[in-house]
Length: 339
Image (cartoon, rainbow, N blue to C red; front, top):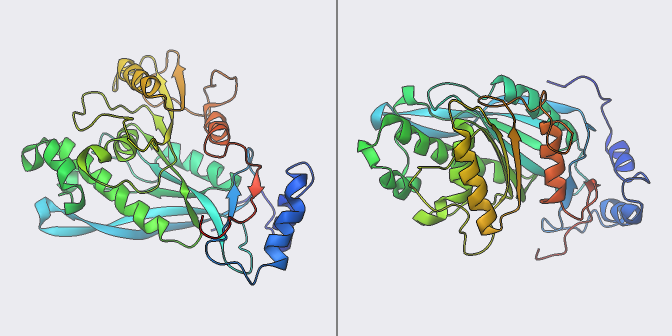
C-alpha cells in the first residue's frame, strides 16, 4: 500500500528535487549527465547510489509477507516459510535500471520466544527509515516454539554453543542468525540494493542476533555478507562464548551504535558497558547512548541522545557520519567500472 503524507513523485520530479541547489550544487550537472546523457551506456557496475536524507523525503510502498527462504522446524522433521515485509521508498529508477538503495534489515525482539516483524518499535521506525531513502526489510525468524534446527551454513557456530544439546533458547538464537543470513542473501540478490550500505538493526533478541551476525561469524569460518553498520537496542554479546567481537583481521567490522537503558532488568547495563569497552579497545567507530533510568528497549522517540536529538534521529545522523561520510544526501554519481 502507499503511505500517506508525501506527494508521489514522477521520475523527473525525483531527479530534480534530488539535485536541487542546497543539497549538492556541485554534483547537479554530473548527476544529470549520468542519469540522462549516458543512461543507455551505463553497465550494472555504474551504480547510482542513493544516500538517505536526514529528514523524511519520500513516500513508500509496503509489501508484506514476502517469503525469503525456509528453515527446519520441529526438530528437523519439517520446514517453515520465512517471511519479511518490505518498505520501499518511491525513488524512481533511471531508465538503465541501476538505481541502488541502502538496506536496513530490522530484527525484532522477544527473547527468541515471541515477537514478529510487526512489533510496535519496528512499525514506528521502519516507515521513518523508508521515507528517508532506505529500503527497509523487517524479518520474521524461527522462534523457540518452532523447535528449529540451524542449517549446515552455521554448523560451526551451532557446535560452539553445544549443538543439539544446547538449551533451546541458544539453539533458537543460532537459528535466528541462520535466518538473518538467508534474508541478507535474498535481499542482496535484488537489483535495487547497494550491498555495501547494509545495516542490521535489532532490539533485544534481535540486537543479539545482529551483533553475532556482524561480529562473530569470522571466528567460526563463516563468511559474513556485506554489512556496514549495526544499531543495537538493548542487546549484548557478554557471555556468548562464541567469538571475540571486533577482531576482523581485514579491519572491515561494521560501525556500531548502542542504545541501552541504565536500569535494564533483562539485559544488564553492565553488558552494554562491556560491549563499549571491546569496541573502544578495537578502535571501532562507536556511538554509545546510555539512557539514564530507562529499562529494557528504551523508546527511540521519547528519549534524546546525548546530542539533544531523538535516539531515532541520532541513528540516522550516525550513518551520515560513518557509512555515508563525505557524501551528499540524494543520488551519487555512478561508480566507475570495476568498483
